[in-house]
Length: 302
Length: 218
Image 1 (cartoon, chains in turn cyan, red):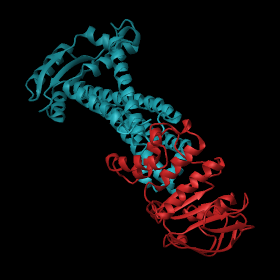
Image 2: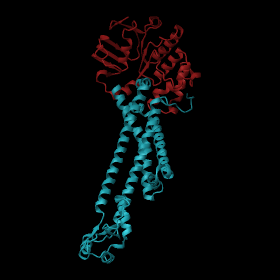
Image 3: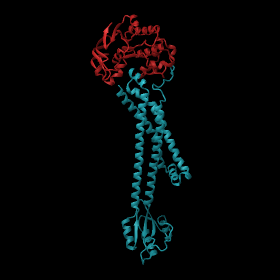
Image 4: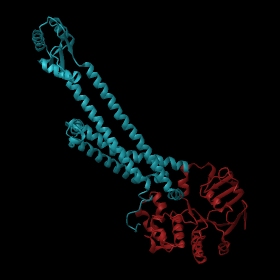
């Protein structure tokens, strides 16, 4: 109640029940949006890291050829590789290392009698990679049963998976935005219905629709901000929890959380900027959607 | 100020509540509308404050043809009107001062600009000491005086009152009537709907009677 000289009360009564419900549901939406943004950055970063790893290395494989001399083949191949421009390093894996790589598929069986191919791990200059077709031709000219795997197929697969996951996360964000808009429309309608008598008095005294809808701005602004920051804090807490609770969440998830929390500066910036957009978006959605809904309802009412 | 020619009023597809009504009222006049409960007095007033459009006929209020009014024109026209209801229609969460100041606030005026006028108006209706009180703490007569103060705070050209004395005792009714008479003396056009014909007897105003959907002069 306002004494002359004191602050004026809001024209619509504060703390309407639909707004309290809206704050809680919007906070959940904002939390989900933070998770989706985190997942988007995480997937993007992982795909980038995997692609870089694959692009930095190629593999040379030499199959056992009957009557062939594997050690000689390896030495020849290494000699060609080390003189090829764009190759930084080339290292032959010994037979045991090759067998170990097959274990996940074949299990621990004796492979002494099996013709296990030998592998050469080749590090390449990402900026100036070798001419792969020419390299493969010169290797095949000197060594029988040799092939060059540039991992292009895996790179393409990873890029495709990364794009699909990014699209999925973006779709989730779009659905969250749509659901939030619908929630605000519903709440704005409920607030107007709950204050029908106030609206009637305001129309009777000559208040314009813009003025009437503006009276709700502060309430919807507060709802958007509160829900946005609650969701943001919960989102940060989740990633922090994932980062520090390795035992509970499992190493890979914990590493993912840690990778977000202690990511390189550019990733951190992308993540925090994305997450900080959540309260801003929530506030704008709450403010503009409620305003448009109220004005449309008032027009129908006149 | 008000010109009605062969006006019929009804709610959507319902029957005619008013039929073939002809009525004229000049600026500065005082007019009472009487009639039994359910005769359509409130419906008649709804036409006058632009909440209803005529089903037939021609209605000109404050120089504007009601049928051709656009929704965006209503707020400015309604600011030239002051409406008082039997049930007061005060906002319960606002103080007496804030309720009276509401029309000026809606017009975008600052508190500094209107505070003195509102306090003077509350003094005029005898509520100077109740400015910070909420409507729930007021008697019926006090609430009606707040409603009257709110209706006149914008210095309207036309005051419409729907049974303004319906919820108060005869002594208070006379006091409220006195406020309307004072406003009329100052040049404001006053149109007052009431079923209390004793009120009309206390004044020299014009009176019309509404019954069976038709209007006649008393």
